[in-house]
Length: 111
Length: 111
DNA sequence: TGTATTATATAGATAATCTACATATATAGG
DNA sequence: CCTATATATGTAGATTATCTATATAATACA
Image (cartoon, rainbow over all chains, first blue to last red; front, side, top):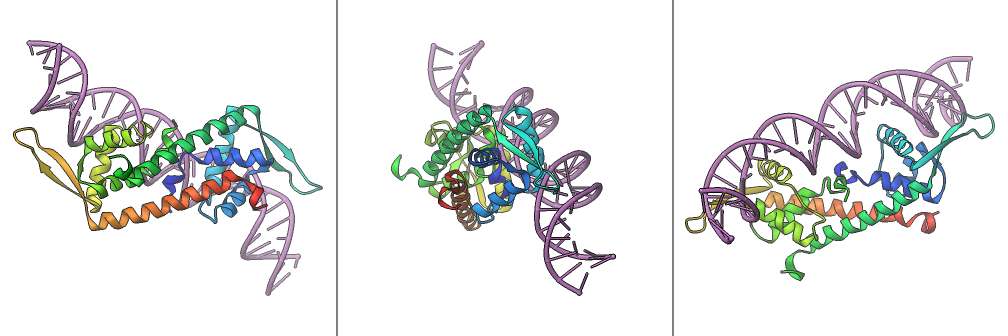
């Protein structure tokens, strides 16, 4: 799989996961891998810096939650700003897919 | 439009155009822009180096064609190798889109 | 004649991913 | 008990694909 295809949509996927429920980083990696049949095997070195960027931007907020004696995990929550950003990104994604499909279908229906 | 989304699919789009007919660089830029309603406004500085890379790889072949006194244009033709590469890329693209859609649809149908 | 469009090209900047490394806790097996 | 693996987060440096900016030159039009 050409990793370059992933470029630009990773943030959208993470925001989407957080729209459903709060998650910690490692959980996002696993969830993405499961849902995509390992098309997305996001690396830790990609995820954590990206989470920090999203937090700086105000799209997500972090909080620590330790469940009974175990080491606390760093959970993330989607903010209202992040919710707006997600909608933008989803719209861009739809537009992008539509455009690619139109090229792939070729000139048959246009020329 | 987030340009990062484009990443990785540009080569596929160019190979696809050449599957339909031989084209020169500038023509590819215009054709992509038209078909995508300017979702893809590929820059010359992106296109020409990419064409050279595809040529080195053996995916495409160039030939000059001057039509009656005018300056000759550098046309490109898809090679059998490039045809195979295009099929690979299209398959990857389908897989990628499917995976993203599955994440966007959320846990409703999986969890 | 000069300006915009067509056409190709290169150099350097930016951005997003990767690999590799670093750290620490929890769990399972020998 | 010790060790290896899985869990969990993090940073540094390399790679890659895009962009902007610049350069060149021919054609079309005013």
